[in-house]
Image (cartoon, rainbow, N blue to C red; front, top):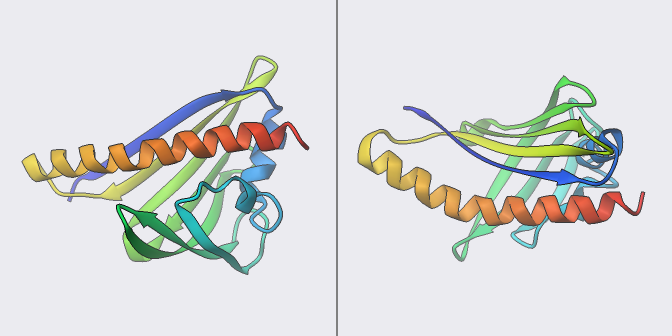
Length: 147
């Protein structure tokens, strides 16, 4: 199966360290930036950064799917990855200094179909995820200003 990738980026007028902390703190900050499509977010173990395990529900096209994830920090302070083993997928948050603020990129990678079915699948997933990611990026920009 080919690996598909969907990304969204935004410039945020807040220090990179502050924005990264929002993503990495699953107890205090991260739940406050989740778009309405997310519900029932709960930390199972840990709470900040690598090793944190968590669950949530995601509503898409009227259907709710349950996810269980674990956080990794390949580059602490810059690059956070959430892996969802049951889904064979992952979502990452790359936070890079840019001018007086930072640039944030949210990326999801997942196993998808090949051929025409894969192109249709990738197109549909992008149409679903991009607005969710744009909303999350706007929320983190707004929330980071309060810290």
